[in-house]
Length: 75
Image (tube, rainbow, N blue to C red; front, side, top):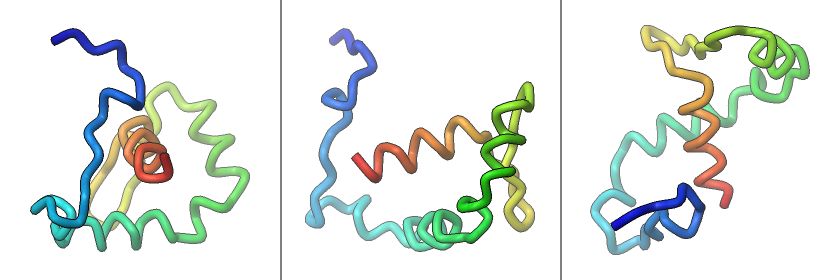
């Protein structure tokens, strides 16, 4: 099956799906609710960086991957 990369290709997750109760969603919500994301300079710095990373605790997260997941959740 070929995918064109559209939002319609991403399956909808219902509350009955096991992944919906994964405790990691709580961690992602905490990250997304950080005031850090509301600061204009953060977006500016990410846009100017060749390979922006989010440093969160002991973890580093690729900026584009994080934004893609957050966009999918908002969609």
